Length: 85
Ligand SMILES: [Zn+2]
Image (cartoon, rainbow, N blue to C red):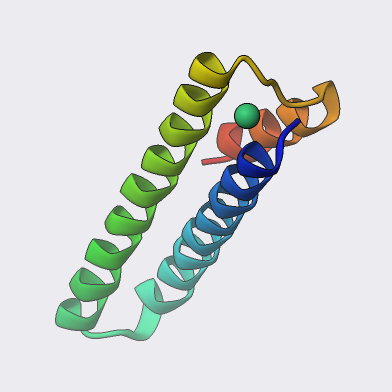
């Protein structure tokens, strides 16, 4: 695992965590936020989902090009995180 792939993994992990936090916030505000606030939050969560998807693709693209790969443990971590979405 090279430095660049580690950087990409961290970026992906951060993006996933922002997305997960956004989803949680969405559940919380669903009850008491105005429709406008809810829609705005929903858009930002959508964007976070796109960001995390892009980060994952960058990571995969790098690994394919560079021939480096993530350890099993990290790969499993990524899969378990994305399966909860
Ligand atoms: Zn690499």
